[in-house]
Length: 434
Ligand code: 5AD
Ligand code: SF4
Image (cartoon, rainbow, N blue to C red):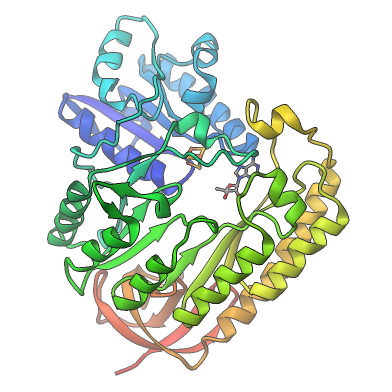
């Protein structure tokens, strides 16, 4: 048995990919270890979404090389950064194996060949690979909530985004394998599955669309919660929203990245919707699902963004009142449409200042959104003890907000009814409702 250590960076999709990698390699004589000091193979499943994500990983590669010298460990770089940088990673002399997101089935061969001291690379992208038949080895989970990939790749080509280049064209996984995996999870004690894709609304396999798939997974058991991510404003359909309304166990939360509030910038970003369209979708969601949680992503300081454009983003945030937002400043990614077509012309001070203004505003909006829940009653799925004390439990309400409450009776995986007493801008402070 060779000991295998993997660090995962980036999105939930990468977390699930790491589980697929453990599954593939465990069939070939590799055993997982959590300790880098005893590993024979050290790998990072990487992210390229912004430059600082890659810089962090370069730092880790240098650290790995200290281990490599000490213990002759094999170093592997997987995922998006492997796909983007390809040979450049091998040329650094610090990496033995480079494998892109569609090349994980070849990892056993690559590792074996690299063991002779010949660096190996496979960054071929596929039109078909979905790893649909592979049963992920869920290792770092809380045993309550599992990720299930339903598709891979992306056909959207937003001008700032590296993902279509690193993860290739969009393809949907066979629905029957998804339902089987969700059933398996439920039988193994999981109480929540999150269906993952870059653009879940364009899921389509053999006559089954995303709304149909959601319904099928929801029908496994009323005790299995279903979540999903990510939706795109131009594609989220009334059918999906209405399907959410039909099933109590489909959680009422939508992550709907807006990226900018300015139509001029949205067009340059190649987002195929306008501010008005986005606001209409939000209105529809809130009409059909009044208690639905809503979160977003936003980019400050995209190419040519003016003060005017930035103010439109701020006003959209005031208007919508998201529960939470993931906020970034624009980082140019080589090879993307924006990098080829538009100068990265907003200086770093301005980007940072605008980002901070969005963060400050969103802080107030989060508090506003969380305060609206005071006095409400929620069914919460227990994830485990709270961060502060083991006399308190934490878990999410259907709307995805984190709840904490004093409790020494229940355990992870139980459903508990709580009443919201107070809040911060990120947590609902509750008590159990008996
Ligand atoms: N620069 C900054 N943020 C980016 N994102 C994607 N590409 C970039 C980039 N080049 C953000 C988007 C996306 C989230 C996952 O990362 O907001 O929704
Ligand atoms: Fe995930 Fe995108 Fe990062 Fe790739 S680049 S790991 S798809 S967030």
